[in-house]
Figure (cartoon, rainbow over the protein chains, first blue to last red):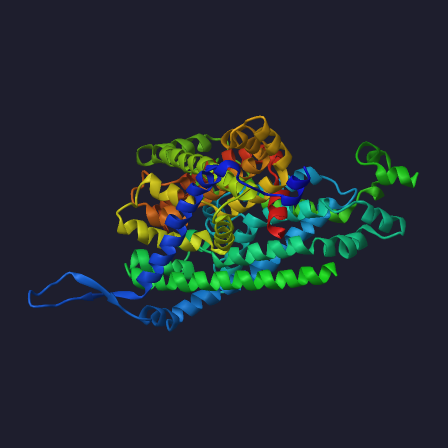
Length: 303
Length: 295
């Protein structure tokens, strides 16, 4: 008993091969479909096709070492930076909006004597069950002047600035409920005696929400923020689906669309691989930075 | 009196003054709910209209002159009933991929959470690192690699890359550590149970809440996935719903002639899943997700 508690995890008895057998499928699949594609993409990104002339005339194009040429091509392409910029605009609008509304709804749900809590919680969670593509089509029809029930005839939802809000709106609509549920779970797990004491001291619901609950769920909010930032970097479904409806969205509107256009439309798999790898590095880098900042904030709060 | 009213959650509330209902948060929640539900409601209303009525009638009033049935018939008859095939494909991808990836994640999580063996630390580190790697960014590298071996454009090319979810393994590992007590495993060993039997009849049962959550997350993730099938598939008979609807929209393009079919398709792809997930909502252990990531 004492040993079990102390060791916590046990070394396999009789050299059982079960754990290795259990973990093997995951490891093999991870190597085949995550690690191998990443390495292959890195490999491709340093190659390019060379059409070998030769004496016989038309030789088959051969893959030759390209050095950093593909990377330089991507990094010096102004369209790459514009697509990154457009993605950042969506992120700058969308991430704070998602966090703000998810937190607001979560705190409202927990207020005593708020009504319709069960119904509104389900309703706000509903869009999470709607695929991003379907949500984009749905909102696309709401934006289109011909069918719009929300004044698309007067408001140009696909205008130069409007299009950013339109795309962001679809993305926020899809994720705000999920984040709200995560934050609401965090609020519910706080010990109730914390608020009872404040209530006896005459604190209002608003004060309790802002001064007690909000700081205590800061770690969960940080996590939601991290997810939202990573989500924003992967923006693809919404602009791709809205594209057939408007000329305001080009085929390279966000970086992932540019990778797709490069690799699958222009058949430049080498350039596409280089851009993919640059994006993966950027995403992982940003995820690490947000995570570190988050931990620092959480660390400070808990002191 | 005030004490009673403070505690009154429900019936007594109506007897007390309306002052006691906290109006501001209630109104905020109602606005939020309307924002989330109205677009779906509008799609339901729009699906009752023929293409001409779509452009000419009041947006929030349904029509009852047979438009709904006509739209559904047109949707399922389009291109020799390909829409039904897309629904079936989505079900195959989401259930097949969801079940398999849950088994894989559950097994790996249990092994990593309850045993120490050669390389277990390194495997876990690899998985934590892979959590940070966004799966969608890998879709095109995955396509390039599979294309090299001529393995694209089939069911496997969509299912295989989604079978292993580092986040799901991570969740299962955390959950196995917390919910499968060493004492029970030790007692089962003393009773002569093999390691395999302990896993099957003790470990997997105790991990059930985590497994259900992982399955639902994977199911939604695969059902909603778009980029992976988009790059992997050429044959539209293999498309999932998301890609199928997108291709309908592309065919429709700028012309408004077929909007009513696309709208009917949007409705059909929302309603069953929404009902399924709202009804399964209480089996979700979302606190698991928040607890898991906090570390």
